[in-house]
Image (tube, rainbow over all chains, first blue to last red; front, top):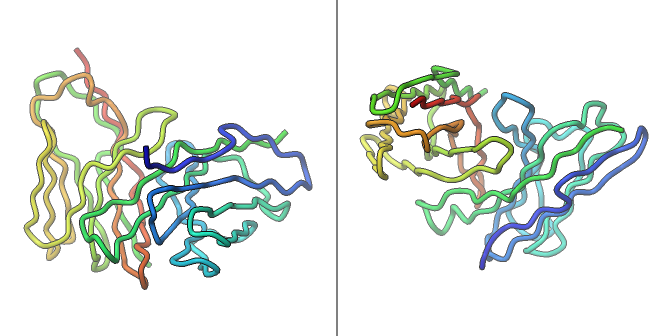
Length: 115
Length: 113
């Protein structure tokens, strides 16, 4: 079945540590996105990528980094510079340029907490 | 800066009743999305609305878009308990081949028996 796989489901970060969240899709989508969701709030865009080896900052990129070495993969690193990393992180993908009616498809998310 | 406002933020309604969730946005958009989120879960796509006057229906849910008023509505007909969830609208702006989404804060719907 086609879909988006995020791992791990739960992640704990120690002070001063960088952690990496994995996102893999087998939907052959061009664009991939990372969002952050805080309790009781909507999603905010961290980074997005339209094509391999290219990515752009979203609204809240500070303290995060990404890479896009393969079409299927878009890992997110939460660096020690992100002082409030506790949140629910959602990865999404889509190809809106080829199908106007296509929504962004979301993975199941990773819950990140500080130890 | 694009702002997306939803109201109400919380809605408690009885089974069998009708109600409407409103989504206002501040600038022009390329498309409007509605998503559903169950507690602790990911987002499930409900509707994608592309043009002024667009209306889509799925079961007891119907979404519409008025681009001139910058308003989308999600109408719930004869609510049932299974519709209890948080509903988000999101405004999409195309940039190259990506669609950047700006989300509303969500409407938590509780349907009581």
